[in-house]
Picture: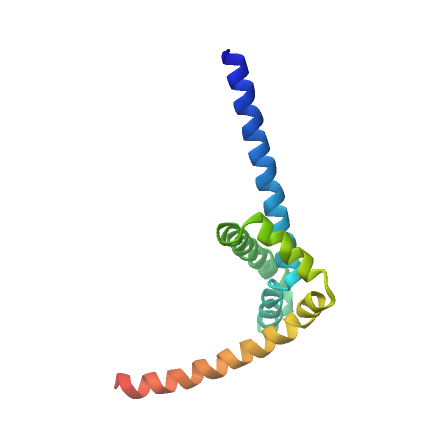
Length: 133
Protein backbone atom coordinates (compact mmCIF):
# COMPACT_ATOMS: atom_id res chain seq x y z
CA UNK A 1 0.00 0.00 0.00
CA UNK A 2 2.85 2.38 0.88
CA UNK A 3 4.43 1.75 -2.52
CA UNK A 4 1.18 2.64 -4.29
CA UNK A 5 0.78 5.89 -2.33
CA UNK A 6 4.45 6.76 -2.88
CA UNK A 7 4.18 6.05 -6.60
CA UNK A 8 0.98 8.06 -6.90
CA UNK A 9 2.51 10.98 -4.98
CA UNK A 10 5.62 10.88 -7.15
CA UNK A 11 3.48 10.79 -10.31
CA UNK A 12 1.40 13.80 -9.20
CA UNK A 13 4.50 15.76 -8.17
CA UNK A 14 6.24 15.01 -11.46
CA UNK A 15 3.21 16.12 -13.47
CA UNK A 16 2.96 19.33 -11.42
CA UNK A 17 6.63 20.15 -12.02
CA UNK A 18 6.30 19.42 -15.74
CA UNK A 19 3.19 21.63 -15.94
CA UNK A 20 5.01 24.43 -14.11
CA UNK A 21 7.99 24.09 -16.46
CA UNK A 22 5.68 24.34 -19.49
CA UNK A 23 3.92 27.34 -17.93
CA UNK A 24 7.25 29.06 -17.27
CA UNK A 25 8.46 28.34 -20.83
CA UNK A 26 5.25 29.81 -22.23
CA UNK A 27 5.58 32.92 -20.03
CA UNK A 28 9.15 33.40 -21.27
CA UNK A 29 7.84 33.05 -24.82
CA UNK A 30 5.15 35.71 -24.24
CA UNK A 31 7.69 38.11 -22.79
CA UNK A 32 9.91 37.61 -25.82
CA UNK A 33 7.04 37.81 -28.31
CA UNK A 34 5.62 40.97 -26.74
CA UNK A 35 8.91 42.84 -26.82
CA UNK A 36 8.61 43.50 -23.09
CA UNK A 37 12.34 42.95 -22.68
CA UNK A 38 13.14 45.43 -25.46
CA UNK A 39 13.19 48.32 -23.00
CA UNK A 40 16.19 46.73 -21.28
CA UNK A 41 17.97 46.60 -24.63
CA UNK A 42 17.32 50.34 -25.02
CA UNK A 43 18.69 50.98 -21.52
CA UNK A 44 21.75 48.85 -22.25
CA UNK A 45 22.39 50.79 -25.47
CA UNK A 46 22.06 54.14 -23.68
CA UNK A 47 24.29 53.15 -20.75
CA UNK A 48 26.96 51.63 -23.01
CA UNK A 49 27.29 55.04 -24.62
CA UNK A 50 28.41 56.44 -21.26
CA UNK A 51 30.99 53.74 -20.52
CA UNK A 52 34.45 53.60 -22.11
CA UNK A 53 34.55 50.92 -24.81
CA UNK A 54 37.46 49.20 -23.08
CA UNK A 55 35.13 48.40 -20.15
CA UNK A 56 32.10 47.22 -22.17
CA UNK A 57 32.81 43.49 -21.75
CA UNK A 58 33.12 43.72 -17.95
CA UNK A 59 30.07 45.95 -17.70
CA UNK A 60 27.96 43.63 -19.85
CA UNK A 61 28.78 40.64 -17.64
CA UNK A 62 27.47 42.45 -14.57
CA UNK A 63 24.57 44.04 -16.46
CA UNK A 64 23.44 40.64 -17.75
CA UNK A 65 23.40 39.21 -14.21
CA UNK A 66 21.07 42.02 -13.13
CA UNK A 67 18.90 41.64 -16.24
CA UNK A 68 18.61 37.88 -15.76
CA UNK A 69 17.46 38.48 -12.19
CA UNK A 70 14.88 41.00 -13.39
CA UNK A 71 13.70 38.57 -16.09
CA UNK A 72 13.25 35.78 -13.53
CA UNK A 73 11.22 38.12 -11.33
CA UNK A 74 9.13 39.19 -14.32
CA UNK A 75 8.38 35.54 -15.18
CA UNK A 76 7.40 34.90 -11.57
CA UNK A 77 5.09 37.94 -11.60
CA UNK A 78 3.41 36.79 -14.82
CA UNK A 79 2.86 33.34 -13.33
CA UNK A 80 1.25 34.87 -10.23
CA UNK A 81 -1.04 37.21 -12.18
CA UNK A 82 -2.02 35.12 -15.22
CA UNK A 83 -3.18 31.55 -15.68
CA UNK A 84 -1.47 29.24 -18.12
CA UNK A 85 -4.56 29.52 -20.34
CA UNK A 86 -4.18 33.34 -20.31
CA UNK A 87 -0.57 32.97 -21.41
CA UNK A 88 -1.54 30.56 -24.19
CA UNK A 89 -4.05 33.13 -25.47
CA UNK A 90 -1.35 35.82 -25.38
CA UNK A 91 0.91 33.57 -27.46
CA UNK A 92 -1.88 33.28 -30.02
CA UNK A 93 -2.29 37.07 -30.07
CA UNK A 94 1.44 37.80 -30.40
CA UNK A 95 1.51 35.37 -33.34
CA UNK A 96 -0.89 37.66 -35.26
CA UNK A 97 0.26 40.53 -37.47
CA UNK A 98 -0.80 43.05 -34.82
CA UNK A 99 1.05 41.14 -32.11
CA UNK A 100 4.18 41.00 -34.24
CA UNK A 101 3.92 44.73 -34.91
CA UNK A 102 3.82 45.41 -31.16
CA UNK A 103 7.16 43.62 -30.74
CA UNK A 104 8.60 45.32 -33.81
CA UNK A 105 7.75 48.79 -32.44
CA UNK A 106 8.56 48.07 -28.77
CA UNK A 107 12.14 49.39 -29.05
CA UNK A 108 11.00 52.66 -30.60
CA UNK A 109 8.42 53.13 -27.86
CA UNK A 110 10.96 52.26 -25.17
CA UNK A 111 13.36 54.94 -26.42
CA UNK A 112 10.58 57.52 -26.65
CA UNK A 113 9.34 56.63 -23.16
CA UNK A 114 12.84 56.96 -21.69
CA UNK A 115 13.22 60.43 -23.21
CA UNK A 116 9.78 61.40 -21.93
CA UNK A 117 10.56 60.09 -18.43
CA UNK A 118 13.79 62.09 -18.33
CA UNK A 119 11.91 65.26 -19.29
CA UNK A 120 9.23 64.63 -16.68
CA UNK A 121 11.91 63.87 -14.09
CA UNK A 122 13.62 67.21 -14.73
CA UNK A 123 10.30 69.07 -14.56
CA UNK A 124 9.35 67.37 -11.29
CA UNK A 125 12.78 68.05 -9.83
CA UNK A 126 12.31 71.76 -10.50
CA UNK A 127 8.89 71.73 -8.83
CA UNK A 128 10.22 69.76 -5.85
CA UNK A 129 13.13 72.16 -5.39
CA UNK A 130 10.70 75.08 -5.38
CA UNK A 131 8.69 73.59 -2.51
CA UNK A 132 11.56 72.07 -0.54
CA UNK A 133 13.08 75.49 0.22
